[in-house]
Structure formats: C-alpha cells, structure tokens
Length: 115
Length: 116
Image (cartoon, rainbow over all chains, first blue to last red; front, top):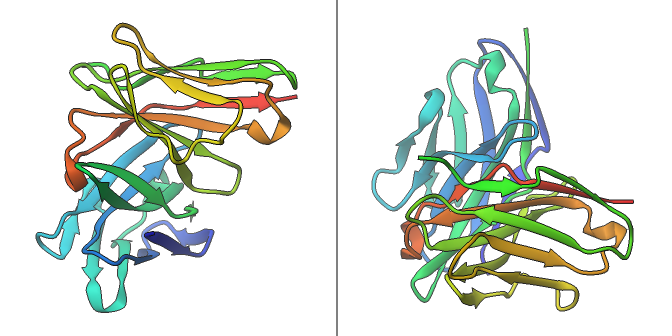
C-alpha cells in the first residue's frame, strides 16, 4: 500500500518568508501526487497535482511543488508567505485500482504565518 | 455550477443514536467518495460509490456504518448506534469519472459529527 509522510505537524513562518512544507511518499508504482489546502471549517481545495508530466508543478496562489523520484519527495514551496496562507496543508497520493482512484493522505501540516 | 454540497454542516448526536450524513455531488458527477478525518489525522478513505452501486468499501468499519447512492437524490452515509469514537469530520468528494489516477475529485465542506 502507498503511504504519505508529512514532516512537521506545524510550521511557522513570518509574512514574506519562504514557505517549505515537506512530503515524502512510498509507492511501488509511479505515483500521482497532490497538495490540498484546508481553511478552518472548510473542505479541501486542490492546490496542485503531479501526474507524470513536468516534475515542477505550479499551482494556485503562488505555490509550487517539485517531484523528486530519487528522494521520493514532493515538497510544497512558496517564495513569500501571506497572512492568508495560514491553513492546514495535506499531501496525498493517488492509488489507482481497476480504473478508479482513491486518495491516501498525510496527517497534514498546519502553516502559521506571523506579521 | 454549485460545488459538492454536504449537509448538515454540524451534527450532534447522543451515544446510541443514528447519524445520517448527506452529500449531493457536483452536477454531472456520478462518482462519490466518502472520507473521514479524525482529530489530528489526515483524511482516510471510507467508501466509493457510483449510482446505485458500492464499488469499494474497503475503508468502512465492518459494523454500524453503511452508505448508499440511490438513482435519485444524494448519497447518504449512515452511522447507527454512534459512539464517541465516531466524532470526526466526514467529507464527501465527487468526480465526473472514476477516471483512473488522474480523475480530479472535488470535496465538499464536510459534516462535523460530535457524539456526546
């Protein structure tokens, strides 16, 4: 079975600083990888996804992630944090089975942004 | 185009009662997934349904939990005889196709169940 590990349950940055949220996966087949954001009491919103095309994936709100097969990583970055980025971020891997897919999520990383 | 609609947003049940959670997928979507988010945990897959069919219920607890997606109306996740450990956020997602690995699933805002 595939799995996802997110390092750090909480990450704190100052406004304007670099954001780096770490995600490592395990998979016996080429993975499809996703980052979702969850604002308080809201559902999950897709930030970006990797589907075996370009290894550097650009998403919404200035976020991007790089797929590194050798490191089994898919870390999320943003050059300059905004206060509005404060939320919980989930990395997920897709498991395709018989023509459909389900998502396996990491435990999430809460991003805190201070003025 | 409305997104995935879940209701109620918040539900409080006493131990032993039944909880019914509803999910209306996005227009044109016939594939529904239910996930559960326990405190301090990521989302865990529960069940995948197409209209009138349960395709994969490998993540569903063996007892007290059931799901359906009738030909007409929303998908229902039903929890009988709730216990405190059922307290969690339950999310529904829908997709246009099963689509293999690249099908994008859109999530609802969730139902937060509290068992007292």
